[in-house]
Length: 344
Image: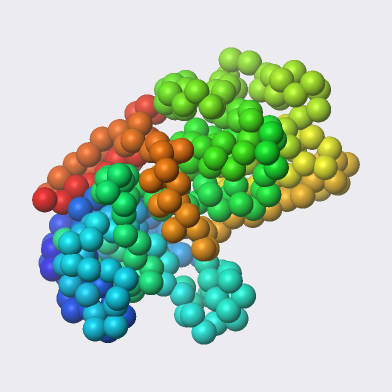
């Protein structure tokens, strides 16, 4: 089957590769329609690794996917041929201690699409467990369905924050995950969400959402702006969604006493963590690694219309131009939030 294969650092090509073609009794076969290019895909393409995850053999890229069911296993009752679906890309060992504790995203044996050595979904057809495949309501397009994966990360962050209605939040980073986190915070009940970045083009995209207040860190003192807006108290929740190592220098300054910091972005290297600054405010610090028990609620939230991801889909390429799509995504201008690859 033809697929977009990462051969080595900076080396990707469309070529045939042996992949499963028949669903097991609990699986479905899906014709792929839309796949988003994630920052992690680009990072593997440019660097060959993310922390301990190292590409040692050719690997099919892509994990933000949506498509149409074309075959179902004998035990599958919840899905049918013709259903539009999105797929949760991490397949855990359901018997593991992590999974039995409801933390299946932390299962050491999880097989996550396009994380070495597991092949991803940038190929015309995939086989996937039915219980990790979610039917899209008629109101949710396949392009939007491929945005459920990054939305799930934002919703995991909002869930970790334990947001109370009327809370104020700060989100550092206005990329895909930052905006998804900000929109999830609004949906969870935040009355004020400030989103901070250095790139005005990204903030202009965030500004398309009236519920978000963009702040350009290069043009004003973001900490003072947040404090002024909260009567000098600070934000109830601070989300770090940029992955910038520099963000940690002032991260806790945004938070109010007794507030919460949620670490979503992944820095390239270890960062300095100001323990005393967090202690002095008795901050609760949470960490996010993907998501668990979120996907169905993410689909429901899209279907409700309370979150609109359409403005974030910036550019689409046909599958035949997947190499060009990755070359673009690696050097995309700041106003590009999400690039998708589209199958016929």
